[in-house]
Image (cartoon, rainbow, N blue to C red; front, side, top):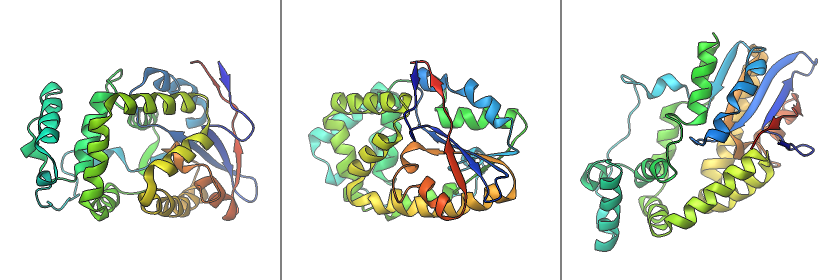
Length: 268
């Protein structure tokens, strides 16, 4: 059992300037790890205090018939060596994800995401953030998103293909190392060490830090402040977005909201 250190927690209570309830912010992790999924039950009392639940984008946007679009890109596989193509196809075959040709006009990071979910194993049928949203909806909460799926796809389209390809190849060439890194991140998550998660994410993103972390922190905090003023919300976003002087928690404070860590006991 672990307890969060001072100002280190996955869950934060939010109150308005007049101290009336605004809701909660939860740092989530897109993982199927059962130890993380075990947190779901402990979230129920806090969900019960809210009228709406928001994840990074609404779970309903990813369903069939969603009006989102991703412009096809030029075939990027010529950037790969014959050995890299062979290794990729071997993984696609192993996890029954189709052929490499099916991904040639999609951003490489989409292929990487599909492979990562398989590489890490599927202890649960759905990632934790999705299960949380489904749980909240089953409790009768209105479910929405802080961002839209289309906004996230638009961000993906702005990342140069050669950078995306480089990240894909790095994971492909260092699968064991990547698994160890993710296991460390899950460990930090269960320790509620959002500071470490932020620092690692900041380093890993490199030149994409502004686009994928800092710009999104600013946009999400602005929208979250409106949500909290509208009605009590339970808002769940990636844990790496919480910490830091330019993190969501700091930005909510600057907007006049009061945030306080909630002490959670987590069984590891």
